[in-house]
Image (cartoon, rainbow, N blue to C red; front, side, top):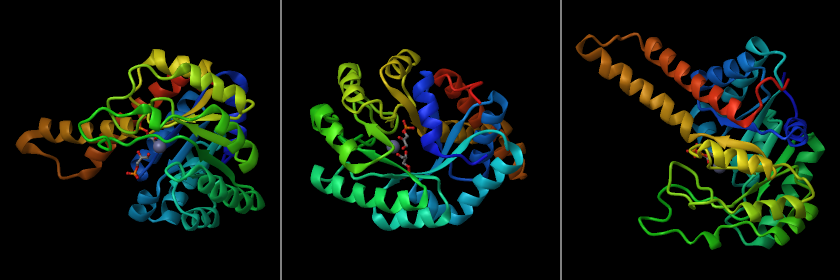
Length: 289
Ligand code: G3H
Ligand code: 13P
Ligand code: ZN
């Protein structure tokens, strides 16, 4: 059942677990996420980026997700979310299509500009019953730092600013930067747990989202859940499972490679489902519906 992300996150925060917000790009990945959620009785967020909207068609990928949920997992609470919306126009498009939640990512802008646009996004979305995630501090991408060391202080979320941002913007969830980075990347050796705790307190129990942690070991994941994170974005781990499965199947088939692409994609779908299930169990969202 397509559900409000705000509701899914509020339950997770209260219950002391986290939900996965898994990126999809196509039919196979979507089915893998939906099947994993159904099998584990886990609430879930399925999200797409602007690049995926261009690749698959925004309305098309939205309807693939919606149809998959309605047909294969009608009792599972599923939020459909726009990940990293970087312009007001893409937010308007997602709202018009029917997304239940959007992220406005103004994290690379100056504080005042980020706040100003986030407020405008919230005004538009509240009117339509759509939830909004904002970001303060910023989460670097793989390759951004070149080969040099990253200066983490430039990226971190400031707890005082976060309180002002949350209060004045009216957002429903906040993405934070505590030493996390997109992609499989050399991250800050130890996440800044104290900072996370301070942000959690200063933002008065606001649902906090962690991007870029799909390569984190279990101990770190548990630690940040206990300090206020109730949602993890997962993309790279899914891409890797998909690609490795395709590479291995073609390699193993050697010269007798099957030309039935459905065999390859079917195996990739199963590989993605396994990863999604492992994450759901790690986050503690299994059995929570
Ligand atoms: O942070 C989001 C993704 O990992 C980047 O995804 O290549 O679809 O923009 P994209
Ligand atoms: P990963 O690159 O760690 O999967 O993070 C994904 C993400 O944050 C998508 O918004
Ligand atoms: Zn992200």
